[in-house]
Amino acid sequence: MKQMESFDSQQLQYFFEQLWRTSDEPFWICKPVADDFEMVMANQAALNIEPAQQPGTLLSEIAGQGPEWNELIANYHRCLNSGQTQIVAQRPRLKGKKFYFEAILVPILDNSGKVTHIWGTARNLTRFMEVQDELQTLNNQLEQKVAERTQALHQAMARLEHQSYTDSLTGLSNRRRFNQVLELEVSRLTRSNGTLSLMMLDIDDFKQFNDTYGHPTGDSCLAQIGGLLHHAIKRPTDLACRYGGEEFVIILPDTTVEGAHKLAEDIREALSTLSINHNGTAINENITMSIGLVSCALQEQSQLKDVINTADLLLYQAKSRGKDTLVFSDKIITGKSE
Image (tube, rainbow, N blue to C red; front, side):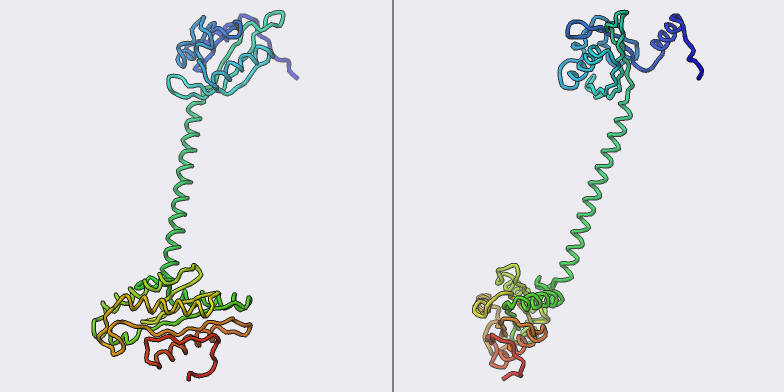
């Protein structure tokens, strides 16, 4: 292995003098004084960063107070006490601006091995760290934008899904949603032998209403009744739907025939209170509804179509008995109407 070439003290002195004068990196030398350190000299690059680094100035006078400066002075003490070079990160605030340095503190020892001075230099990483901070800020902004766009997309999808299950005129769930929920409830309640109530409601003589008052008024009537049904159901598991035309349905899981019967009568009473005039019918001077209601415990053999057919049959019977009435049953009917 080739032996390292040596230099005499004059050559080394010349090298360090040139480095001191011409380098863009800051250099400084200080000496320990009591519990502090006194500045001996600093090159122009160091003075450009902090002009206060004048000979005779104490490091504590330059540093001031604060956790960052306390840590800075503590690094000098570590260098002094250990006699070892310290490589430390420094983040001082100078002239109101935050700087980032990687500092090297080198102990200068006398012949007895005592540290008499500390020679320091630092690499100014401020711009590098600023760029890193800018990139981090941009990354955070990008992540925020992505999160906002993702949330907006989820909200848009939720709105579209809601619209796909909603009747635009009445604001109630539509037939598609009815079929989906009823299938789930029949399956669930069949397994648990639970009680399901299904109510079918039909506006009496609605064709005559449209013929008498016009379709815009008919649409207004449907919207009012949709609002009535929406407010009539109280539990989140209950579902009111527009089944088609002037026909509506209400799914009432885990509801007894007594509870469902009371709700049906409350709906009829609320409709009467609306007092929607109907001169095109001989039933009543106001809009009325016929209601078919089935409420029963579902067995393993219960079929979805049987539940719907029973409610529909009971509605047909209500119509046959003069309309503006309620017909209910506590069991699924498989035969023909009476």
